[in-house]
Amino acid sequence: MRWRLLPQSGFRAMPWRNGGGTTWEIAQGGFGGDEGWHWRLSRAEIARNGPFSVFPHIDRVLTVIEGAGITLRLDDAAPRTLYTGDEIRFAGETSVDCNLLDGPTRDLNLMVDRRAAQFRTDGPMTATEGAVLVLYAFEDVVVAMGQERMTVMAGDAAMGEGGSAECVSGRAFVAIISPRGAA
Image (cartoon, rainbow, N blue to C red; front, side, top):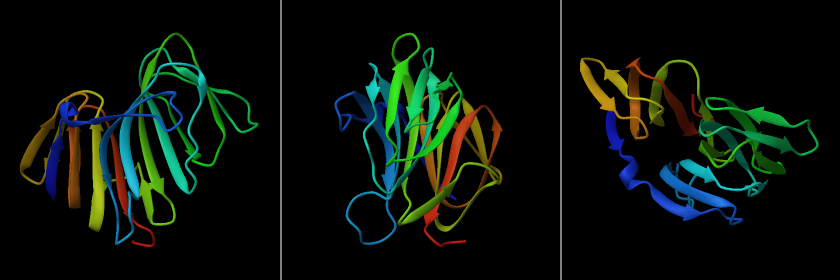
């Protein structure tokens, strides 16, 4: 597996589509000749209460990583409160209203275009040929790829293509993203 370390100093800051916060893009990628991205991993600061941007055709995973937490109302469902470490999955078409519990939070967001890609966030860290493995370190993480070891510092990320790896210490968010229909 070929790995690339993605230090947070290189994350690209951009305002939210609806102006309600700031996103730092960690990594993005695609599978084929289409314009734009098929998947994106980012860290966001939610600075105030309000709606999330709508992203048609996108499946999302949000994990609270800093702050007191948030309460989300997805469409007409009962509100759901998330604290540091909690994760929620939802479709990008969903109407999401967010309320901060006690000041701004930081969240990790994985967005995947379901028309072109599929993903998983559990099971072994094995990326088949053509698939991408992305990792965000919640704390310092040591990743083993056979006999090789790599340390990813808290707040940094790493990305690899094809092959297997294992977190031997530390906590991290890991996703394996592959083209739609791939094994």
